[in-house]
Image 1: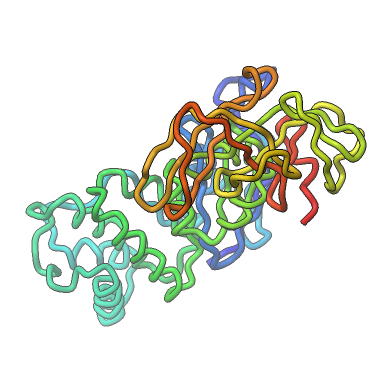
Image 2 (image 1 turned 180 degrees about the horizontal axis):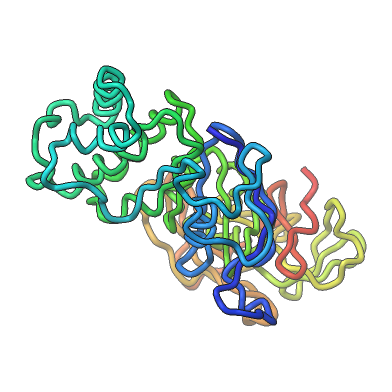
Length: 367
């Protein structure tokens, strides 16, 4: 395994002149030896480009890639000793499951007894032991992708194993099983794993650290709780969570905050005299309050949805987008739920409220 350090930018066109010309804007990040990471973001955000730069399939326009301090920017994937698993299974249909799993080891001249031991270990982890002598051609798509995953994991000497949306072709009800298996495998083998996905559930359940990307930028790296509780960028607040974070325009004025025509008293770290800001609070932290309560605003209910384990309340705060906006709240099933058209008071300012300027976190409400 290896520690991977990146300090680079990449553009597919020559002589890039603006940010829009870059697939990856300048970034510096590290993946620790034995860590499990996910690159998370929408299509076109640069996550696959970043993965291919790590693997050696793409050379960055500028900057460097280092493995354990050694510059490998000009090296091929083979020279970097990388294993990569792609979106669609890469296997040999004419071979058995065992032969497919053994192929990367046989190519490197590993002794037969070590191959048998390692193939047996990986097959057991992926629940393929009963199919080792079955030809791959007759297997279902999820079994074929398990083989592809196994081929990436079977080598013990790789610098890192890279996954490019490997569960896309898998039936939804089987995805959670494979995510659980990958997490178990990482815990047992302590491999350096980097996993590309646009699915936040996959990223947050698999990885120890998630790199959230948008428009060629890595806007935050953190654990699931860090990304949820303290998004460093409005995109992270919007992209992580279901539904995402509520955002309202606001103006700070000393120890108070003007939101949608209401002045709220406020104790916040670093907020004084910032002027126009954006208030962000997750639906999970919005609660019903008494009229005039501290940190609360009136809102008109536009929809109340029974999700089963909670109610999702959608409201309108203020006169419109310029003075307020839509605020959603997740409410427990055991409390009285307001109906559409009712006016309620919602507490928006509390220990979990964040404040942003130019999309970047600048202050947090004091707890």
